[in-house]
Amino acid sequence: MNFEKLDFNPEKRQEEWKEEVFKYFKGEMHAHSLYSNRQEMGGGKEGMVHSDERLLSYAEKLGLDFLCFSEHSSNPEDPKKLEENDPICESILKQQEKIREINEKDIYDLTAYQSVEANIMFDENGKAIVDMPDSVLSQLDLVVASRHKIDDKFEPEKIKESFLAATQNENVDIIGHPYRYIEFYENDWRYFKKYNQNKELGEELQEMENNSDWDSIKQIIGKNEPTTDKLREYNLLFNNLKEDYWNNWGEVLKSMEDNNKCFEINLSSFDPNKEYFKTLLKKTTEYKNLNYSIAYDFHNLGQLDKYKTNHKVEGVKNPARAKGASRLLDLIELLKELNISPDRIINSSEDNFKKFINSKRNN
Image (cartoon, rainbow, N blue to C red):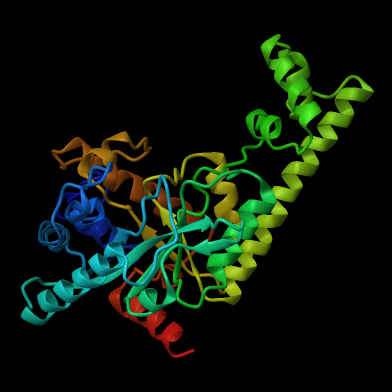
């Protein structure tokens, strides 16, 4: 992902592509260091392998102006409500002290910021919450709130309820990978089968699948025209569920706009070449005051190697880094198609980032 060596299009000079990339991306908003492993508390499952110093050095070589350390709060796979004196909260604040010392020493030619990736979850009473207390969140430079492990995570009302808990929290700045795990594709049999809100119907749909009744399934999900009253009824239920899903997105996006929360385009899970993501991003453009952040959600270099991209990047020897740069170029192409300009991307410049943060802190 070395932008200094980009040679994507032989018809254009490297400097032209470097300039194009940096119009949209001058700071990493969502990076995980060894702090997310919680090694001082027994280690973690995820593969964060880099120290904060290593990440800052790498970001500096890429030509970035700033980097946000968005460490995990409680375990994303088993989130829990944290108290202010929890070792995880203390760890985040300890890292913040270290980051401030690094900035004061002016070691790197970029600025570091302290963030956290808090979990959006449901507590023991079924109430949607953010797992880290406001008394800690309010001390940080930036707060990302994300859905990870949630029971009934696909159920439309639960999706909306959980997001609204974060969009209405004054300390939250960014909604992290908001689409992750809850995609509803155009003809999504899996989603309809599980979340049609009717147990008997769900069992019948499962039996259709078990019997490989693909013709009926295609009629239900709209790939073919329904031929019986029963299949027309099920097709209507499918369309109603899909309509509810997208209506709920409308409420969530409106709340994000009204409460000045950023929609994170997380390149680790957002594929600019898939129709669902194009549809969702197009829907976000209905909200003219909604801002965005672009992030790699960096854990380790290996994650970049899994990306499927359209662009071909020449001159980057490491295949994973090349794919990382290619996916960003794919996204920029989509942003242009949707007329999402760099001024709406809060990390298109450090000045834009500071402007966003100050606008929230001054309210």
